[in-house]
Image 1 (cartoon, one colour):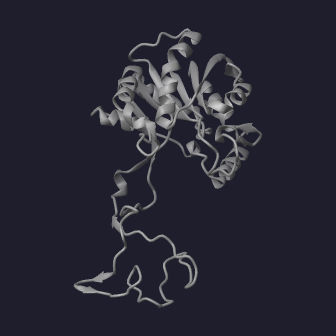
Image 2 (cartoon, rainbow, N blue to C red):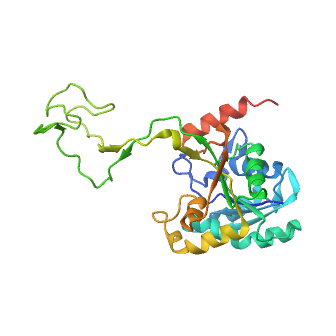
Image 3 (cartoon, helix red, strand yellow):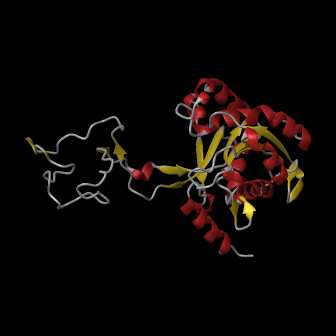
Length: 289
């Protein structure tokens, strides 16, 4: 049976709330409750939930040692770390305790999921696809969807946007995109008028072929031994969000091990901004009862 680490230690700053994002309500229920119940509905045997250290009691009121709709699924609550990667590592340390509470033998090949509470509407079918892939032989599995937008690679923020160049001619004093300085024509979309604050302008350096690109979701699944090894190998990166891995699959990739993909779902959107929350509320309202 599968076990899971549910990361819920993030702040709600970008969502416009003062407390932890996972405790924000979506149609009368917290993101944390919805995410935990979705994992339980998919057959996950036990959860470790990472929470902000100073909010542990608030989290314990929402998840009092088990998933509210599934009392047979135990929940172990631990304090998160300085980064998402550090929080997951803290969750992994507590996973043997959660397994013991559920009566699960935690072996090298046991499927272990890492899920984000912010993806609280992830359908159980997506969870099941990830677990099944691990059980059928994959070392690491991520759900995702093909990218539909055109993507652009841009120069680093520290790069200066230089004069526009056409062939061998340089337009001295040109605005980004080739419009002469002082001209009011052909402004960049959203560009401020003269006298206002100018927007950040970054140079496009490439257009990746989107036919090979997929947007990754969670839960990501791993064999227990592989996930432990990956976090041990990348331990030094976890001290800061600026260096930490953005997902656990990247740590597995750094070992040179294969990561497989299964299809995700549009419902597995990540609630990060107020707009995301409004969209999630609309999706919940349209769900069949």
